Structure formats: structure tokens, C-alpha cells
Length: 334
Ligand code: NDP
Image 1 (tube, rainbow, N blue to C red):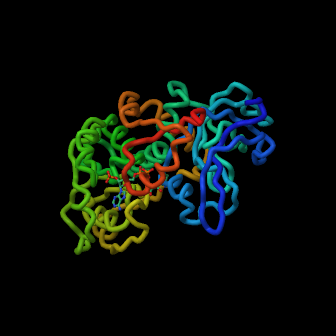
Image 2 (cartoon, rainbow, N blue to C red):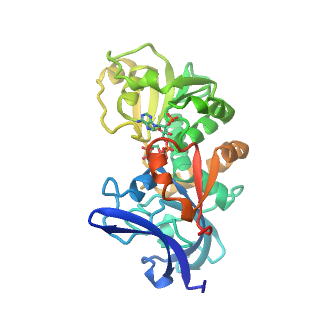
Image 3 (cartoon, rainbow, N blue to C red):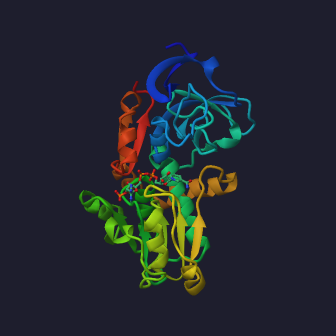
């Protein structure tokens, strides 16, 4: 491959059907931006699964290179903050949705969107964290900002625990000294979750039914919720007085049928987590904390790897809730 050419997973759309294939492209196809990055790794997140399948109208223009996050080395920079050779990581800013993303050996983006790789992380581990792990840390920070401490009574619940956001949330919270309850629909992953630090496993079905009453017995001190829907409604009804729920995702549905009673009678806080447009200072804090508060042996235990050429079938698996932990995409295995 000449220096100008690179391989990428290109999505094309015909008659409403989206197809994906690894193709060799020239650098003049890259979108506008002031920093060009030689990508080392990307990952598969739930949103990538939707984009690979052409769901949710997340991508409006084809051909398109997906991949909502990546880590790599700066190759060319017109941005004062970065110079060639700098190791960088990117999540969010709708890269991989409206701007070509990380399923590619090269990416061109705005320097403002990049974060320097924090000390202690390799590009591969930064991507093992990726968008899902970054979101989990934003959720933990938000719960802490609303008063959660390890000595508060009650457990901290993580829903969708065996998935990407959930796995990182369990490992970080357990490392910080919280007593973590992990909710999963996968009995085969109970030992995995205990290995990440979960003190208790909650069957997904226990939370999946609408709560039926505005309030249930007080149970959770806090919650990182990746599931939404009736699960989130059940969690809100079962919060302890003054507890907070960080709502990250909707793997179980976007509707939320609840009442105002948990907010009025228990002072519950419902906190929205957005990793996409999150401002840079908060990004830097979250990445620094991920390097500090996420044990690397736990991160390695939740990570599997896939070659870029083998990635497309995993879209169905992540949308069906069948991917465990984090899936790192080796963009150089084409
Ligand atoms: P994963 O697919 O890795 O994890 C989702 C988990 O949710 C699954 O592993 C499964 O966990 C559980 N689950 C799946 N389907 C259902 C269902 N029908 N009912 C109940 N539980 C279900 O996805 P991610 O962790 O990458 O993302 C999780 C959610 O967070 C997604 O909705 C995603 O879009 C969102 N997200 C939001 C971000 C933000 O900025 N707010 C950023 C990143 C992700 P188990 O098998 O353990 O039950």
C-alpha cells in the first residue's frame, strides 16, 4: 500500500439496503479536518451496530466509513495542540455518523475533537475502553457529583451489566469501593461479572416488568442504567431516598412510563449522560480517571478482538445483546 492509500470499511446504500465491504481508498477521499490520524484500533459499540445495519437514520450520506471511536497516532496536523507522532483518542462528536469514522486505517478530523492518550494507557486499551467505557465513567462522575459515596446505604445497580457500558461501570465502581449489583439477562455471564467485582447478580427479569406501583421497597443507592424502558421505570421506583440514576442507554427501549412520585417522595435524581457532545474539560477528566480508576486486568478480561474484515456479522450480535464486554476492532487486519 502506498502512503496515500489505506483500507477502510465502506458502507454503501442501494434501494434502502446498506452493504459493508473493506475497500482500498486514496487519502483525497477523506473528509475535511485539520488533523490526520493513522488509526491503530476502533471498537464496536451499540450505535455502530445500528449504523452497520442502516438503522435509526443515523447516517444520512453514503458512501460512509463508520466507527464512532478510534485511537492512533497523528500523521499530519495543522492544529497547534497536536504534532505528528502524538498518540490520540477520539470518541463522540458524531464521528462515524455524520463524519467518516474509525473503521479505517486513516481518519481526518477536527483537532478539537481529539484527546491526547492519557499516561498509562496504550491505544489498544484506550479502545478497549472506547465510547462505552468513557460513557460509564461519565455516569460514575455524575453520580458522585450528586452525592454518591461508597459509605451510603444500599447497593449501586448496573443494568445491561455484561455489555460494554455495563462491564466498565461494574469494574470502576467495584474498584472505587462501591457494593455493586449487576443486572444481566445472561446466566452464563454471572461468573464474568463477579470477576469484574460485582457483589450481587440481579436477574434481568426482576427489573424488566413495569413496577406496577409508584414506589417499591427502597433498594438502590445509585444506578448506571444502559437499558432504559421498563427497567429504568422499575429502578426509579426502587431507589433509596436521595439516590441518583445515570441514564446512559436504551438497549431495552426508549419509552419511559413512570410517575413523578419517586422524585417527589424520595428526592430521586434522574441524570442524563451524553458522551457525544460532552465538553472537552469533562472529557479530559474522564479519560484521566479511566487511566486511574479502571484496573487494567479487569479491562483486559472484558476485551475481545476482531479483525476489520470480520466485523460486519457482529452488528447483529451487539444489537441482540450478545456481545460480552468490549470488542476492539483491529483496523490493520484487513
Ligand atoms: P451492549 O450491547 O454492549 O450492552 C447492552 C446490554 O444491555 C446488553 O449486553 C444486555 O446486557 C442488555 N440488553 C440488551 N437488550 C436488552 C433488552 N431488550 N432488555 C434488557 N436488557 C437488554 O451496548 P453498549 O453497552 O455499548 O451500550 C448500551 C446502551 O448505551 C445502548 O443503548 C447505547 O446506545 C447507549 N450508549 C449511550 C451513550 C451515551 O452517550 N449516552 C454512549 C454509549 C452507549 P445483559 O446481557 O447483561 O442483560
